[in-house]
Amino acid sequence: MKTYIVGNWKLNFTVGEASIYLHKLLKALPNYRDIDVVVAPSTIALQPLSLQVDRHKIKLAAQNAFYRDYGAFTGETAFSQLRGVADYSIIGHSERRYIFGEDDKMIAKKVAAAIRNRITPILCIGETESERAFGETADVIRDQLIGGLSEVADDNVDKVIVAYEPVWAISSSKVAKMATPDEIAEVVKLIRANLKEVYGEKTAKEIPVLFGGSVSPANAGAYLMVPGVNGLLIGGSSLILSEFVDIIETAKRTRS
Ligand code: PGA
Image (cartoon, rainbow, N blue to C red; front, side, top):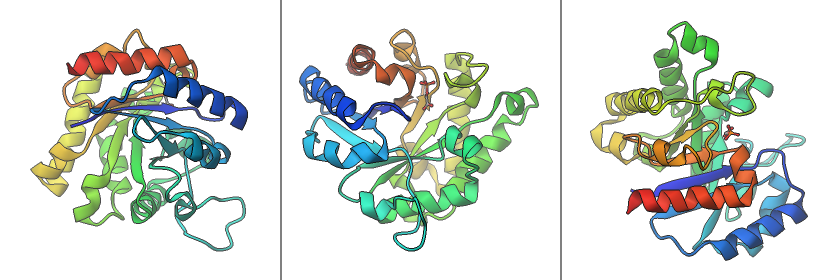
């Protein structure tokens, strides 16, 4: 299986800044066949960057889009409009869930819409600090995972990437505690057990599971060694080119 290194730029960089960053990143990277390097800029930058990018080296992800393909939905961008522009889309990020009120039902429609438009969904799931404290982690993970996949036909589920992002480990959260490899391993095991139960062993093995939450050059190696983890979703550290490149090189070393 490939390793996925995904940079989530969130609401940062003008189109010009994004273009300069991409230019430098393209120069810094060789063509790593076994690593998919992905960056997720703001929607407005996706189209110009798609003309600039060398897709053998770097792929683009949307941070969000709407599940209907067209219609009276003021302010939205559809997955159908991103077809051919973005290869991936982050869906259900905790900031979408908790700031913009997205629930599992809406997220499930978005996952299905992405697949319908040949965009690989990166479905983000993860418990909050209080859910963990109350012992609800397993239930939250199951609900968000199975709920998020509920609109996808069974034979398409293997087109999804899952990202485990404990909300308490994300750098923008108030607590921002670093997850330990053991904590991650336990939840990743749970994710695969749920996938196996609902979709069978083959699918459970084929779906890449990424980890995200305060990933940096200092911890990327340890996180990539966690059994069952196939890549990283990186926020803050992906905004600093040297750190992002460092993490990609760590991924390369970890594989060989
Ligand atoms: P962080 O963000 O790496 O800054 O914690 C990760 C994310 O929100 O996807």
